[in-house]
Length: 112
Length: 115
Image (cartoon, rainbow over all chains, first blue to last red; front, top):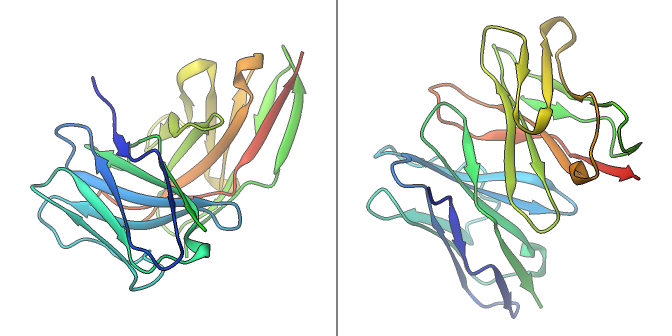
């Protein structure tokens, strides 16, 4: 079946602009996660959604970062007023069972 | 706090040789442990997982891992490495309770395979 998809695959933006990254989870998966992968910080958890529960936002690095999940499916990660340190690969994952997360190919964000 | 340590940043082995990638974790309760592999430009692929039961778990691509509670380790092994195994390998622990929670990743081990 189809895996987790993310769009765009690459995004180049100017410092100070807002960006939106999209994630389509595997159909039927109730949990959705966002991670960030950068050279200096490795793989970092950002946020996760589980069903109708309040999202766990504990990994968001600043209030410039936000995410929503509409209809229990598609999720959008928004970064406002982008900074150069936001340059990274943003990975989305979804899960139907305990902790077994399946990852998408990622969105490479470059802030110039 | 939960943490994962992968002591080896880079490992090089010859094709056909055996492989062991080390992983140590810090977690207060029974851990949920994972190994993921990432090929260049790709996302993360789950190799294997440990939740409970048999401490030797089998995964895809001929990999296995052994959970040793006394050593807080979950090392990944393969008896004979293929050139296509060259990639970056990440060990992770599932943090929190309730079944759906974040993964804490190690820094990764980059594997190079010589012909």
